[in-house]
Image (cartoon, rainbow, N blue to C red):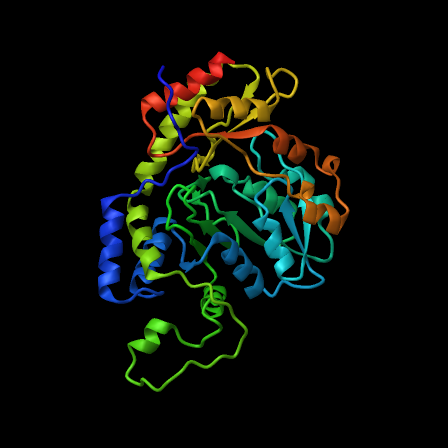
Length: 380
């Protein structure tokens, strides 16, 4: 087959998003306003949750949740060892201590069996990550941890994913989603917090806008132009813009189609690559829906024809972009040095760090693209 150039991911945007942005620009309201409010309302309805708050990223969303829960110095927060670094960084930004647990190689998610031994009197929260779009086994986690420990879902990859009939974003006390261009739907940068806790939602809504007592839209549409908000708590500027909100509305309308299409091609990969014995392929969960933000495989160290990085390089030469699944945070310099951690402390996270690989799966690929990827693997 003729050489192709297949990106690891491309956002599926077009005329709808362009016209939405154009309308917002012409309206003159560019910062957080009516489009963000509409996006929040639709997102909450789609995920069957009481409150949704748009923010600048999933990372700032997680930080805002922790800050609103008053988690800080002296507190511990349990996080998986195999995740994007932001999951641990937000804990440090609050002055708290991240406590790592290992993951399951099959799911890439936090291993519930490893959690209880990490719980101490200082544990205030746990951040399970729905990695690559697969929800964690939240029932197992809830059966293990004491009820006073807050569950904060890192749902960066899990827009539209579900577990036992419940949507990601409703499985814990609060959650944060990402709309980065590599996610199923995008606003460029941006994120969304969800929660069913009204008091917490009101607190976070105030904190994301510098701690202002009234929102900008409410103030500008009021009858007293001389009024400025009161500030009775310390907040941040974590507001999403209406430009992003307008794109998010259009993307959300396409979410079900995007996930359905990704699921179809994930099944295709499973069918066409299952005869390659040195590849471990992800499964569709029996108790929910996978969000398929990424299609991440694991290579057998013992039987793969070459180390992962060499295979990735060969695929790149053939025009197929790949990426490591993500990284083992305990192997990164900051965390190794700060907490005296070693690669072997979390062996499954270490092995996933070295052998997991994301291959192209997105809504701008064709059947010929998928066949080209499959053919390249069979050449090995």
